[in-house]
Image 1 (cartoon, one colour):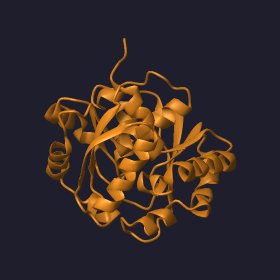
Image 2 (cartoon, helix red, strand yellow):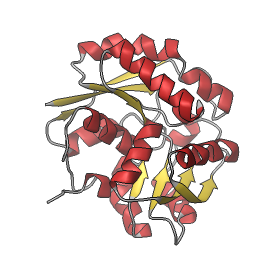
Image 3 (cartoon, one colour):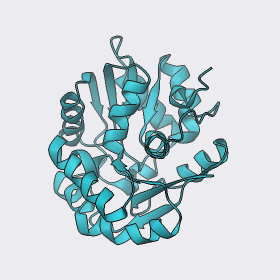
Image 4 (tube, one colour):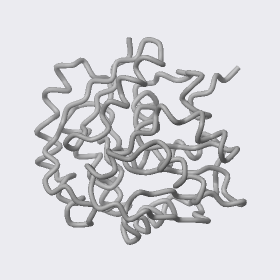
Length: 239
């Protein structure tokens, strides 16, 4: 059994993770909820959610769970710190936990590379200014962003309440003929159950926040080759 520990801000779409556990064989994904602070998709609120003190507070509980890696399960709470700041955030988390550590923002970068996507479209529930910060973060990793669609959702709780049809519509609107994958940031969106439908709709890999977060934790734990039929191209069986 491989155990990937997640630090998750507040409560929103964390029920995506038990679904992933069910689909993957021999994977345990304990979730520790951190203090999220203000429920707002603003730069200031997102910066606060990923503060060192808030992340450190959940580390001991993850240690007791037997975690082999730890991932800060927040896209906005990592990329708003910028490329260097996000690296500093995960370095501090690794030191505190004594475990390999990462965040959802870096998970998107590595997952895009894994599926061979050097050009991507971004389908974000965030307001436009926050979505553009994510695009800039990807650009800093050498990933070309050819399209950004921002739905303007103001909070995690609002994103968590989205019906599947809205997520599907957002992905379709964001897709671009030059994009080799569509990225859906925001761990507050329920996306895991929709992955087959999303990829069928656009005919290319779709990477979503809760999906890539677990994949990144498995990568850090040296659990390569974990696969499931219903978790998208990223988790497809590699013969």
